[in-house]
Image (cartoon, rainbow, N blue to C red; front, side, top):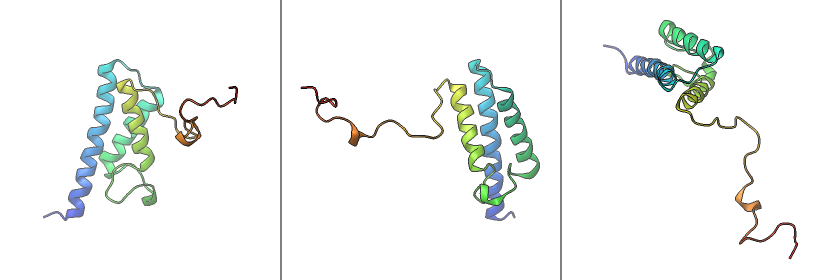
Length: 113
C-alpha cells in the first residue's frame, strides 16, 4: 500500500498535468495563439512532470509534494489567464495609489479653491 506522501505526490502530479492540458486546450478553443516560448514551456514542464513526477530539481523552489515550482505555477496562471482573454496583471512595481493618498470628499489636490 502506498504511503500518504506517495499518494499526495501522485495527486499533485495528476493535478499539474491536468492544469497544463487545460491551459493549452482553453487557448486552442478561444483561438488565442500562445507564443513559441509558452508552447515550449507547457511541453517541457509536462514532460518533466510525467518523467520525474515534478518539474523542478531544487527542493527550495517548491513545496515538498508539489509538481510545479512557485514560478512555474505563476507562469501557468498567466498562460491560463491569457487563454481566457483576461488582461495581464502587472508583475512588479508600484500599484495604483493607495486610498490614503487620494483626496478625501472630492477635495482638490492643487489647492485651487
